[in-house]
Image 1: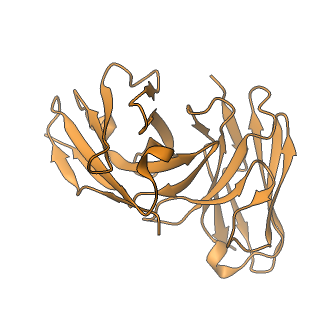
Image 2: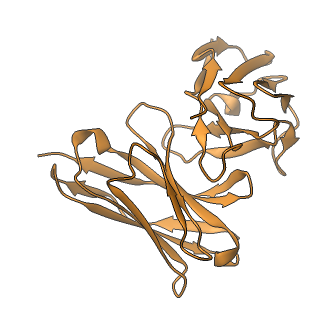
Length: 108
Length: 117
């Protein structure tokens, strides 16, 4: 099974900061990597698909990069509504999916 | 608009079974598969399995394959997930989600299943 490892597991940042979250796959997954945002008590929301494609309606301050085994999610200028938990997810083995452990972004 | 509406919260005793429904609307039901994902309190997301709404084919997570079943009813655009022999470790919010190619693009609102004696 493919394992997905996110780092850090949590971070504290201020409004306006640039934030980077990393995700590493235990084996090659090409660009089959998606990113989700989840707020407390809500279902996850798709932000980025195929490693770097922004879902329609998602603010352009979110971006994704990477391929193979190493990926990053970047928030260029953190906004108050961005405080949430972020998950990566591999779909190389679709329909079987694997999620990373999550990164909680908190207010400094 | 695409909507996935799940059944309500459940409280079950250890050893019992639970069946959660997920009714889809706003798109052609048989064009997309449905995955089930669960989230234990304070924990991350765990993929449980997937069902093709086109032909009923399924794929389950290895750790659950002996206890989980997913079925589809095209007449009502509804998918069902049944989990048997419940333990306290199964206490979680259960989500259905539409799988579009290689991404999950729409999610249900979640169903809390509590297992307690």
